[in-house]
Structure formats: structure tokens, C-alpha cells
Length: 186
Ligand SMILES: [Zn+2]
Figure 1 (cartoon, rainbow, N blue to C red):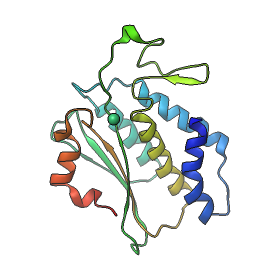
Figure 2: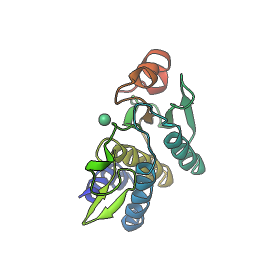
Figure 3: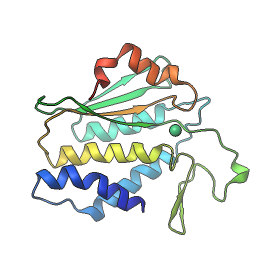
Figure 4: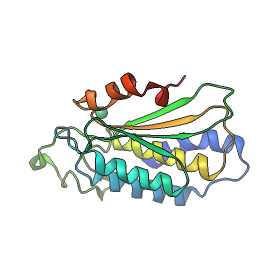
């Protein structure tokens, strides 16, 4: 199901404007790799420590030539913003996901909550459906748009946000209050 969701999300902008079709098998494998990597990072909030996830995303995006900025009031809890530029004829689109997760009691888990174990068609991990799925999807969307050189009428902004699960002052509040032009979108 997850693979299908990613495929649908990615298919419309890419296929509509580009004749060459992505290798979806490769895309799925790559998506799973990033998804599991993110799930294996303990970004429980509190205390947060989203830096590891933000650094991971930064390195993946920059390797593909996508510029990245980091914004933080606490150094271990950065927000990441990446932007693909369009021709400016329409206002930007903002893709968001948050890198922190809710606290967890490992005793209640079938598989360790930061193991990203694949079993029976599922991926077990804190944040698997809130919100590292959206982070991984947003990351892949940026990579695919860039690789396929899709002509854009609008900037596409990717925000991987810290602190969503209880410390929004380090996350969306900081971005909205002090860096709004970086995430302003239609
Ligand atoms: Zn959430």
C-alpha cells in the first residue's frame, strides 16, 4: 500500500510533464531505504534531537544539487528547508513533514520501535505513519523533480520540521515568526 501511495503521489507531476518514465522499482527501493534510515533515528520529542534526521536529509539533497538551509534556535533541533525553483508564474507549493516522533514504551512493541523491521508486509517503527512517511515522501518528491528536470510553474519547497509533537517553538513557530519568506506558499 505504501509503495502505491508513493507512486501515486509522484506519478502525477512527473508523468504529466515528462515523456520519460521513472524506474519505479528503483524508486521504491530508494524510498524504502530513506524511510528505514529515518525510522532508525531516535528523534523522540522530548527531548527531540532531530539533528541526525535533518543532517541525513541535507546530505541526500545536497548530493543531488538541491540547495538546503537549516534554521534552529536550539542547535540539536534544526528545521530543514529545501527549494526547487520554478518560473515564478505561480506561487510556491509547500511540502511538509516533521522529523520528531512521540515518546514510546518499547515493552509494548512487537519489534523494537527504532528498528524499522520489515515483517509480514509492514515496517515497524515509531514515526512510520507520523510523520517519517511524509518526510520520506517529500524527500523523494524533491529528488524526482530534480532528476527528471521537470519544468515548474512554481517553486516547490520542502520543510522537514522539528518539534511538531510538543515543542513547536523550535519548529513551525520559529519558521512562521522568523523565517516566513522561506516557507511562504500558496
Ligand atoms: Zn505528527
